[in-house]
Every structure is written in structure tokens, then in C-alpha cells.
Image 1 (cartoon, rainbow, N blue to C red):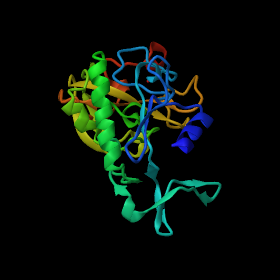
Image 2: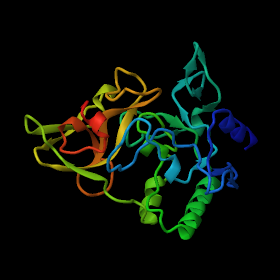
Image 3: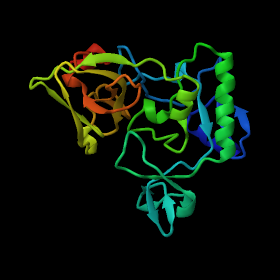
Length: 270
């Protein structure tokens, strides 16, 4: 736990709560102080969205101590990545890693260190306690929901969607928009096209979607809305719900929608 706190401080990050592998809960920051965990992020924004937008000021951050995402298998273990030609620790054996796919990257199956049952139980109990005290909270979300294609935690191994449904914390449907395409059709893809997205459904002129979250990119060649920005920037692609189920259905390019949550300056660049 002390190592996790030190690592967070060194990176200028903070959470309201940390949950250790034994299930113990540690409050790291009071609710009346802004925590720095979400970074650039967006979720069901109504308008004015820009690169600098963040949910830090309107959320409670909970972190479960975990090695997280592992990118590739080598020498009998799963590793985080390569830096300066060398594999980076920490690593986990294949037997102790979950092979699960994110809803936002269905064709990619990275490995995750499993959360302990004690952590999952404590996290659920903590959420229950917070919701009983603060009746203005209306949604449970993960970093992977609000910073798509940049943050990958908590990942598919934590039952966030189950808790959303159990506690009735799915929030609103998000900004409504309709397909407005020159040829009368709009491809919905399993990933944004710059991520190799494949068409999974063709939407028709006038079809309604609800915009959940606009995706990010770290490369200028992929980010539609790069300026002014350092680090990750908004793209023209959004996660959408298409049937009122309040769930991610796929990604569409917002340039062919009647409305977007982007600020007017960014919307003009689509």
C-alpha cells in the first residue's frame, strides 16, 4: 500500500479510496478535496467538451491495488510493455492472469492480474456506503468508460456493469443525436477507424443515437481535435447507445450526426 501511495504522489495522482489486496479500505483524500485520478475525460457531456475537460471535480475515485493490464507473453510470463528495448516489470504468470476483452476493444484480449475476492467485496460494500450517504450520485463508471483508448482500468475483470444495474446507477442516456449523412448511411464500428475498427452495423438517415463518451488519441495523426493540446486529445469518434439500453453498442464518427457534445470550435473541425 505504501508503495502505491508513493507511486501516485510521484505522478501527481490521487484517489479518494485505495483498496488493498486483502480487502482493507484506506481513505486517501477527503471528499471536500479534488482528487486527480481521471485526467482528461468525458462522460455523457451535453456540450462545451474540449481537450482539457475532466471529471476529476465531479467524481469520487476508488482504486484497487492491482498490477493491471499486461500486453504480451514472454519467458513464461505476461509483461506490461517494452521501454527502450527492454521488457518492463512487474509481470505475472499466465496461470494467474485473466484473458478478458474490454467492451471497447472486442478483438483485443489482453491479460489482467485478477482482483482478489476480498477486493471485489470491499469495493461493492464501499460503493453501497457512499450511495447511502450521497443521494446526488447517479452513475458508477470506470476510467475505461470516460477516457476510451487511453485508460484501460479497471478493465473487464471488475463487475462495474453488474453494480451499475444492481444499484440502479446507470445515469441518463446521454446526448441524443440523429444520423445526418450525405449518402444516408453511417457505419458503426467496433473500434474507431484509426484503431482498425470494423463495421458492425450500418445506421440509416435519421436513426437516433445517444453519445456516451468521445474517444481519445495520443498521436496527432489519429486525433481529429489536436489543437491546442499536449498529451491525449479528443477524436471525432464516440461510443454510442443505439436502442435506449444505456449500453455501449459501437463507435460512430460524429461528423455525420446532427449534434455533438463538442465545443463549437472543435465541432467545426469534424
